[in-house]
Length: 270
Ligand code: MG
Ligand code: MG
Image (cartoon, rainbow, N blue to C red; front, side):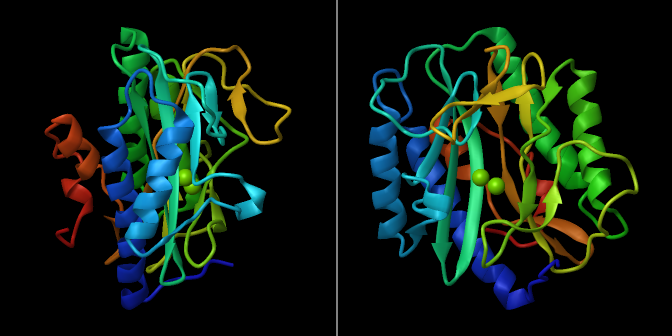
C-alpha cells in the first residue's frame, strides 16, 4: 500500500534527505586515492550523528555499516573495508539517514583521480537517466512510465539496466511501496498519487545487465566484471509534479561543478 505524506511530513523528509545530501557533499572532498571506504564510512557516521540523525543503513536488515560502498564492478550494497581507493576507480556511495522518524536515501558515483573516458561517459549517462526517470514521475503517470524512460534512454546508449534491484517508496520505512524498477512498460504498474515519495535509483552497467552476488550475502557485482554506476534521488509528488527532496548541490560545490540540472524539479528553494 502506498503511504502518502502530507505537506508537513514532506518537509520532514526533505530535512532527512538534505542531511544525506550534505553527507555526500562532505565525502566528495575526501574521496581520493589512498583513502579506504572504511575511513569514509567513519566520517559519514560522525557527520550524520552531528546533524541530529541516525545512519539509516546501520543495522538495517543487519547491514554492518553506515554507507554502502560499491567500487568499480560492484553495483550496490558493497561493505566498506580497509582497502585504499586507487586512481581510476569509481565508487558508488549510497547513504541513508533517519531523523524525525523519516528516512533519506540517496547515492552518487564518484570518480577517484583520473577515470577512463568510457567509464566517465557511463557515469554521465546514468546520472542523466536519473533525471529522465524523475521527469516521468508526475500526475497521470504510472510506475512503468518511469522505468520505461530510464530503460530506453540507457539501452539507447548501449548500457545494461540492472533488473534485480530497484528504487522504492520512502518514508517511515526505508523501503515502502511501490517498487520503482529501472525498466518497464509505458502505462503499466501503480498510478502515482499526490504526496507519495520515492527513491529513484538507476543502476547501469557498462556491459551486460546481469549481476551476481558475493558470498558476503550483500555485495552485488556485474557478471562480466565491467564497471557499474548508481545515482539516486528522493522525490515527492507535489502539485502533480516531481519535487526533489535531495540535492547533489553540496557535491558540486565541493568539486567545483556548475550545474542547473535540478532546477526544473524544485518548487521550494533550498
Ligand atoms: Mg540508496
Ligand atoms: Mg534506495
